[in-house]
Length: 262
Image (cartoon, rainbow, N blue to C red):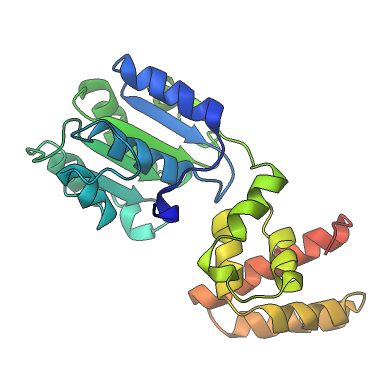
């Protein structure tokens, strides 16, 4: 079985979604911290409800095969962390596309990730669609619902997700490709700084951050040195690598201030 397809934890939330789907409910709002599996679970349910047989992770029906090789045409997805996806015309185009025939899918699905970044225009478009459409299964994914309009929240069933238990978190990360051949010291350092987020842990492991970690560890207690590190990082620009390092430094400083184990 492909481990990347496995879903870990969140048994209560998954059971509730399964029950609601069976009752033909079609609009969900998944809320919880970064990197704990919300989007993966949404994708899993899109695959399950469109399986042409009795669903299992090993199923090789035509629909499940399309999920294994990439998102099938009938599954639509936007990530609003991407500024380009926040444009009303992009969202309008996606919603129009969703009205086309969905070949090979029993229940077409749409996943909107990081909806915390919705703009007012996008909220207007989505609210109308949520009210009028009953043919799509909607999965709205957010870190928090605080920034969403109450009218949008009222149209979807809010399902709250919580951080994984530490034992389960470590079981997962030690089976990731990023930890293969890595020392236990490095894995534990990056795990403690990732705040229980699998995706953040993967970014930190792939970012070759051990030298930066040792530098800030040696410089801790020397404010001028820490400031110099931050200034030099800022000079490197706004690349993805620079943003990952900046998040890493903030997590390090927070951990030190709150006396977390590193």
